[in-house]
Image (cartoon, rainbow, N blue to C red; front, side, top):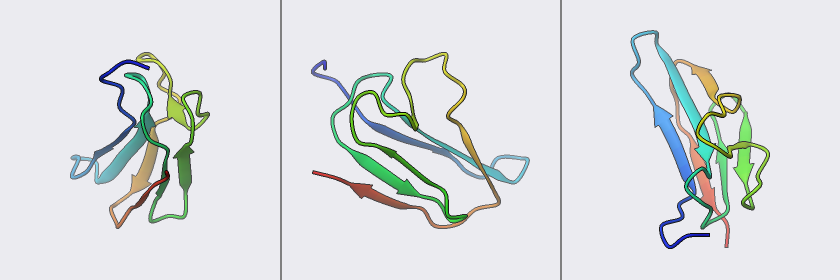
Length: 79
């Protein structure tokens, strides 16, 4: 882990296609466990640096999630 390690929740709303795009990322390192609950019931989490729900490297496009429309996300930071 580097001094600038950061667990990220990334979200894009108001896109022209009406969808909301979101993901978790540990490409720059891991510093805090996190869980995200999407409005459609999807749950993604990263509880360690090799989290299966998170982007692990910058060319990993398999972890992007799409929500039709928008809504309220719940983000939980674990200790």
